[in-house]
Length: 194
Figure (cartoon, helix red, strand yellow):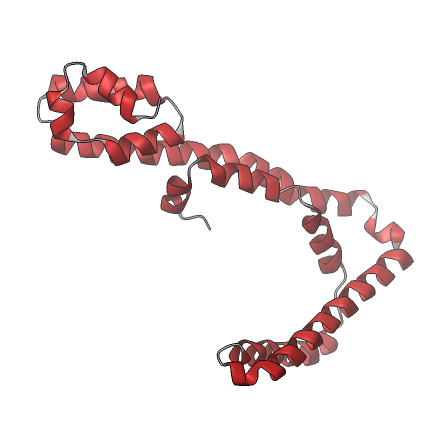
């Protein structure tokens, strides 16, 4: 789930980071590791032990006197992680036909494709959200309807679909400065960071 206000505050860096995360090597590693699973009994035994180790390790980080226990548990977790990677590599080498088929490739590419198609939707939703906040604010601040429409049109002309400019306008707009300004369109351009 995405909190749109967090996306709005992070500007375009969020979208760039999301796209790059979709194409990292870790996605392939996670996919291969998750492709092979243990039997139900193995996971039923293994999972509570792993949760206990992680919980004790987290608790050991609360005080320096538990530092030795924390180091031992971190080493145990690293060994478990290496064993999982080794098991996955072993299963991958044994079952190359199982991992390199059309259905597997399709299930690997699906999250990447969905993320890529989700980004424009999220971007447009963010733009809409920022415009809505600005326009509601202008409806409250600027009582003159003609001046209100002029300010909104100017913002649309200046910022278009640039999240950074919209955020700048939203943060820096000052009604007194706007009303005292001789050229109000230039004031909006100036605060947009243009």
